[in-house]
Length: 290
Image 1 (cartoon, rainbow, N blue to C red):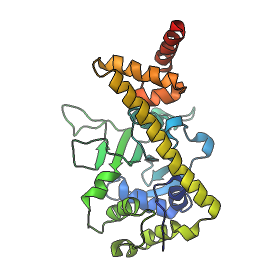
Image 2: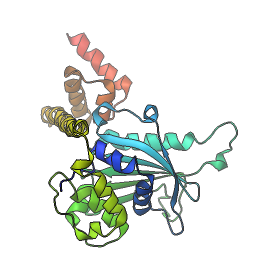
Image 3: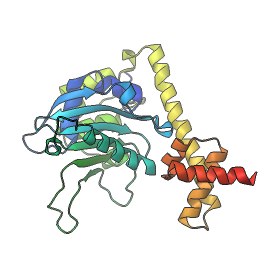
């Protein structure tokens, strides 16, 4: 019996986009909900509400849910970490928070928004922790919290390396995401012992997909590899040329290389964090030198 990687756009959406009860189980296991709290309502966002980022097409941002206390959650799966990704997560969560308010509401009616991001890269190399929970707190007294936005980032490669053996649902779901791929033929008994994980496994079996879907699956990974290679080539080139310069100068070198390569402002912003106005100024400078 052969399986597909659940981190692929196609398979992730098949498991969690077509089976709300599996998504509820997953979220209740991964989110820091607190005692007595659980996810009750799910809303799958229509495609036109999902933010598009050229370099980050290999991401899934399509689920909003609400728990039994009225708190909102955004679910995002991200396969590549960049500086721009953090800003995008902040933007999406803030937008969900503000959108609660209309003419009939008062500010005190706003409910907190949580953003869950599963990242298939290591972005915190200085710590062995794979689960990162961020809150808005008072620096002098971290027990005092400003409620509104909270963020959870899970570094999947670190979890895989940790080789957890517990049978808690959080561990089982993360093992499903990190241990199952195209090379999986033998499934660990711990995963088969849970009915929800077993159902998820059935949904990523190769035999559950049509030839057209399998072609889509392969194209997705091809696109991921191309985008990551493209990003790495131009970022590395910029760093090499600007290694003896200051940080600002290195960024400009990266921007110039990206512009020369025909990249859009949105894509360059994702790479560097610069605004449209800053990028346009570099474009103007290049044009004037011709």
